[in-house]
Image 1 (cartoon, rainbow, N blue to C red):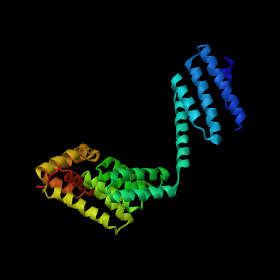
Image 2: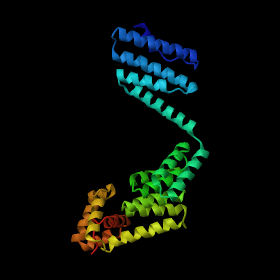
Image 3: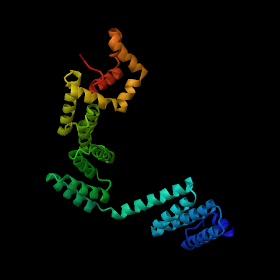
Image 4: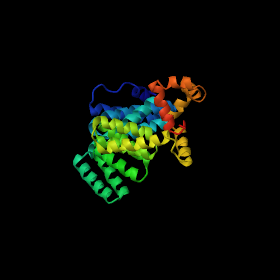
Length: 298
């Protein structure tokens, strides 16, 4: 099958469109001939993959990635292999980046964010989310839009979405205090008081006098101390324990052989327990267990 063999040769070394067009024509003929002869699906797939690669080379100038994507998809229906799949992913990524670049407009992003702010003031949170989402599409690097959308999600108790946006906000600008107040608020509402406290404290490293962060620390400490004093109602304790047992960090502490011995000593060997408490790392883990309601102080 001469056409397929020719197709399997390396692509032309230069970036001249004519050579790539000739390569594409050869690939089309190879696919057509291969199907006429009922050749191995792998051979047809390789011809299609080679065609898609040539189209991708041309797309560097034309920016037309759709044809390459369609070609790679056809190749994968003939024979699925990692190389073609990677080429498809690269083409889809290039297309997405191109679309984002064409859509990028900081001025429109600011306008959409302001529209979102107005909707937020009017408590029209779903509408505000639409405007913030558009602002993010127009300028994906703006931490304020993520921060504001996180606030909307929190108001709507869509806490996982709010947490994701808050974390993205912090990723874009680790010095922006609002990112930490948003994330801390979500964690507080999720009753993850230890994590919320850590978030607020991290924010204070960047803005030591921020009142929202300071208030967040105070609220978290109140909730943590409530467990330490044993002031939780039976319902609160049961809820906190159930949530704590779902926390991977709590699970790791409880399965740690050293901590299991520490917990045993707390119950059976007070003298040994006192020695354990001198270790700051052990004390920190015990405090997390107390906060989660797993260990109770009498």
